[in-house]
Image (cartoon, rainbow, N blue to C red; front, top):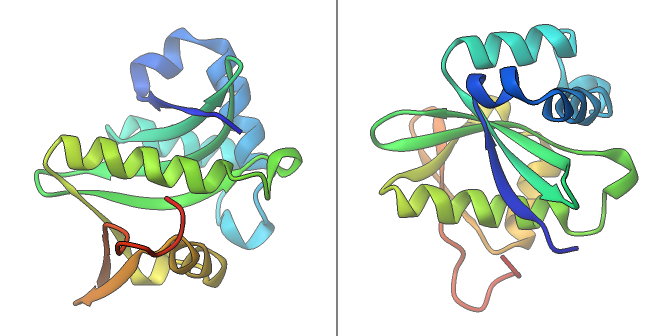
Length: 151
């Protein structure tokens, strides 16, 4: 499924009702264990803190998203979710590849807190050929190994 990267920050959120609708639906479809707070509160808190979402866009609709907190060295990823109707079609894999490319273009690496990486996400990253290098209390999502997976 050919998707493109669409970054959603507070300004995009405030100006685009379709983005609001799509992001709410993406996270409403999340498995219950993935969302510890109500979806509206999660979205509001993330955006109001100055963070953004990396989203997979297809035919002007958002199908998947990952929450991103950026600092000078890295993009910290959490809460990867794809709409239930489009799971297992490569949307999450493609989204991670696009986010990885965007982070590297900006001179940053991808990281995720070890406590926020569900087993299903660990399996996806391993299947894609990503290495999880333990560095303290977080994982560095290094670029895929040559010949490993299909980023």
